[in-house]
Amino acid sequence: MSKPLRTSAPSAVSASPKRLIEVDLPIREISAHARRDQNIRKGHLHTMHVWWATRPLASCRAVLMATMLPDPADAACPEAFRRQARQILKPFTGKDLSDPLALRRALLDFIADFADWDNGVNAVYLDAARRLVSAAHPDGPPLVLDPFAGAGSIPFEALRVGAQAFAGDLNPVAVLLNKVALEYLPKYRQRLAEGVEKWGKWVLAEARKRLGKFYPADKKGNIPLAYIWARTITCEGPGCGAEVPLLGMLWLSRKKKNMAALRYRGHTRTKAITVEVFQPKSERDLQGPIVHRFSATCPVCGYTTPYKSVREQLRRRRGGTRDVANDADRRTFDRAAKELQRLQAQHKDNLSLVPDEPTPECRGPGASRAFSLQRYGIQTWADLYLPRQALALATFCALVREAHQHIAAEENDPAFATAVATCLGLAVSNMSAFLNGLAVWSYDHL
Figure 1 (cartoon, rainbow, N blue to C red):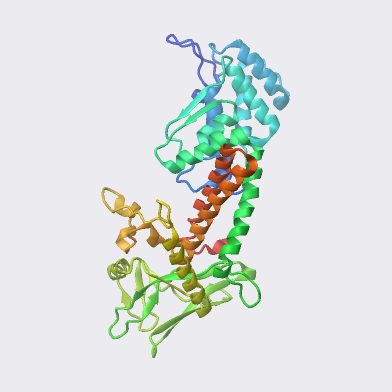
Figure 2 (tube, rainbow, N blue to C red):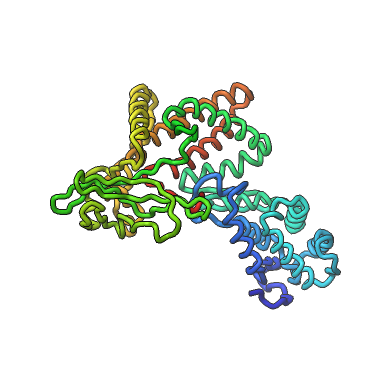
């Protein structure tokens, strides 16, 4: 809640005025904008690459403004700032702002409104924000330092309001994100956006030529949206030994006009388990999941293999997977595996075609939760990818390198080529969040 407005006497220690953030902040309004900010998926800085615990741009923008602007009700506030602030804010309020308390309220209202996503790119609000920051810092733009910048919300917003920004981080992904946001975007602006769009389309078109045969259309000419896979174990029930797919969530789509789900059937005579897609009419039409709390119940014999046995089997099989698709899909998958082997045999670079570094070990407090891959037999990063997934990612990486060379030759600007290729590389890296053996089907996206 907002604090009561009051004027304050200058400090006996320092003549510097208090910052706005020290006396008040419209938390409720800023929080509302921040919640919306986190749900925006188009044109947002944070969609450039996955990052943990990203800070909302809205709240960072508001906090920065409130930190850089002095409290006009403070006796130590320069009169020059009050005078310029009244002039800048008059078009927004239409009120008499001669009272310092009224001016403080107008500044706080402006900060709250400026936190809105739409106003963050509004030319009128941008100009006013930058003029306010300039009025508060007549000797030159302030420097904002963020030594652990992460996804770059704070330094990015500092640039937006006219400050200088310096960002650092220990993680190379974070450093790359900030390099794009703080160097490439301000330097190349629209040219960078156009370059990324142009060469992104080129990379996609070339990828379709090279990978199309590994993603064949069905009899109606439709390209599959996804391939459903499941990790499997061998049922440990007496005399069974069926290969059990670890299916948990069976829904594929829950939209009323397009409901789809998986259903399975165990065949006692052959010990086989078949899976098919069907259209349920309601939740009641779905079977229970095969896997629950990491224990797996066999559809053939009904035996439940306990969690520890499930984990041990996956560890021995390096997290082994099998598809729940048809024979044609399996043949295509085998061709992709052979093509990947061929490319790996021809690969001459010092870096492996598919990352083969070991995955983190489960050591130290909390590590077993954060780094549990090796418990399930995933010893290297290559174990995360199915052959067709690895082939696709390797192909996109190769095409980004080719695009880099083409851009440098066409534009005669190596630095710009690096900027575009960096953005394309981040896009490919984003794909790896979906093109891997740990990705799960998100039914609410259909």
